[in-house]
Amino acid sequence: MTRKILVVLSEYGYWGEELIGPLDVIDEHGYEATFLTPTGKRPYALPPSKEPGFFDPPLDKVVVDEYYARKTAEVDDSGRLANPLNLEAWFPERPYFNSTNFGHALEEYHTKRDACWKELEQYDALLMVGGSGPMIDMCNNIRLHDVILGFLAQGKLIAAECYAVTALAFARDFTERKSIIWGKHVTGHAIEYDWHDGTGVLGIDHNFKWAFYPLEFILRDATGPDGQFHGGVGRTISTILDYPFLSGRSTQDSRLVGELMVQVLEHGLRRYGW
Image (cartoon, rainbow, N blue to C red; front, side, top):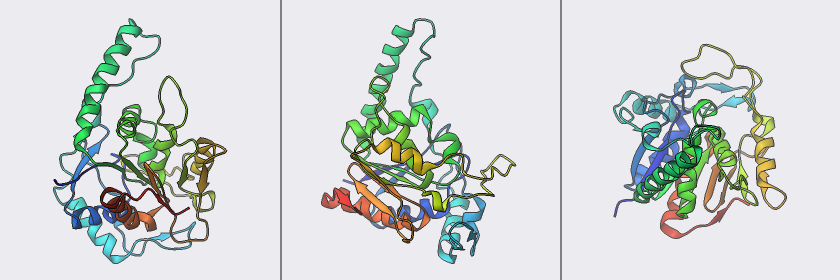
């Protein structure tokens, strides 16, 4: 049976290599990728990720080579991403605590969410693609949190790259409110590699300067004293698998994220990188 991967992309721009890296591996192994966006709009790559030779100031090096620039443009210009699933139309949103008939509304929400979780059974893994866009419409998206919790409840692989790793820290049971990565090992953007200027997203004409938040601090707090944040500072690759969570720090980890997904799904790998 063909393995199916649910791939979540921001409507405010994804980083090209962070889609293409794992997608190349998914395609090579004959897996089926199903794309999902927060409101069903077609996702697009961030322009710098399609620019060969794009220079990353914090890393002080070129981070977009000819191959990934070309492949990103090819996928971006194709019809492959034209009709993503609509998360807003699929998963319910938890009601406001002070809304009318909150008790009954909460029961209805859980009933609908259970039905959506049943539909997640067709997928073998979840992949959340990074970039600056996810900071706007993915990381604190309650519906996406419920997708993550659904995969977690089914014991399935949950992979996240770059700033999309934030969603792992924010997704948590509404009643317990405990981080799902408490006691786990993860990676993500280290302070040393955060931008100080030039952070931008699609659809908003503004230079946000620095990243919206220091992801390293969030992950250090969310993993707790028995878990660990691995920044991998000074190393080209920082990819951590602490099943069911697979996290990649940035662009350079993208293909390895895909390769490790295959190792998990086909060979039962449960730990890597720490």
